[in-house]
Amino acid sequence: MIILKIGILGIGSYLPERILTNKEMESIVDTTDEWITSRTGIRERRIAADDEATSDLSYKAALKAIEDAGIDKDEIELVIVATTTPDYSMPSTAAIVQDKIGIRKAAAFDMEAACTGFVYALTTGYSFIKAGIYKKVLVIGADVFSRILDWEDRGTCILFGDGAGAAVLGEVETGGYLGGDLQADGAGAQELIVPSSGSRKPFREEVLTSRDQFVKMNGREIFKFAVRAFPETTAVSLEKAGLKIEDIDLFIPHQANIRIIESIAKRFKQPMEKFYVNLDKYGNTSAATIPIAIDEARNEGKIKKGDRLLLVGFGGGLTYGSCILEWSK
Image 1 (cartoon, rainbow, N blue to C red):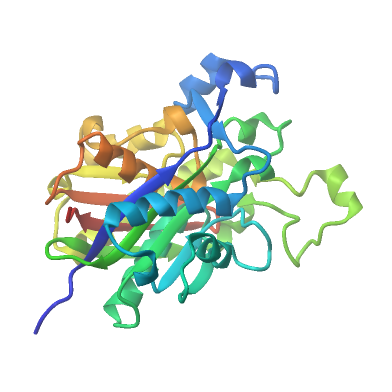
Image 2 (image 1 turned 90 degrees about the horizontal axis):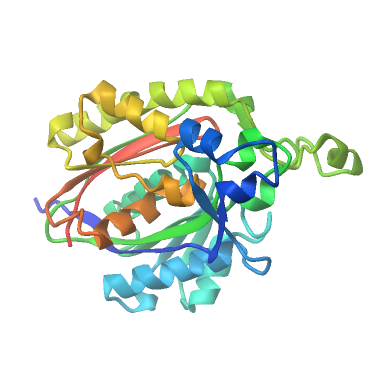
């Protein structure tokens, strides 16, 4: 019996040009550079231009991933965009991206799992290929969180940035997807939410007064959730892959807060050098953090063929998940 190996054929990312530093944040909300850096590890973040939407960031990241994969765009049979900030409620951002790229025939849909979105999308894309439905899938994690931030709320606006990352999945000769886990805890839905963004509380004039069109977050509860969920989902993926924590060459966690990552490294008794961190430059780009980190780590020579990567996401839903990849390129 031939076991199909499925992995990343190409990776790419895109960050908007505008940089918003902590020093600039001091003139927007009551905060300081030292306060933000010491509590989050974030020093600056990228902000999309007024004429840039999620599909634009996705498109630019996708082109790089397709080029890196060395394939023709029309080989892609499915486009998945993981995002909390779609261009529209309808149509899907994935369909818009498909058109922008010029893929003639492909299925396309969005996936909403907040900051866990890329792990969800990657696992979904892998499953479509493993089932024999498609051969090549484009998965994208992208968000323009600056559009749903309350710039008067220092508890949230200092944390997030905009960006996109993309990966082309397909059959690989060695390595690939070794095991994964997706979970959710809907009991915590209210801890990280945009109250007026759907059918539960349609946008009305009174929403402007309550500012319910913006992200609301219980930071303390989200922190506790993250440090609980990270090891829980990691244990499942390790078991499925038949590996131990010491077998992981590089941890690529969701880039939410340096204190979360440091806490996990200590719990796993692993050196921080094995955890890729770029949140100091980009902040929390939601579904985009993990693919951007993979792309940067690869470009910096921190990922080589045969390396085992552990990807872990956690975010609104509450959702969390992980997967282990053996790098195939």
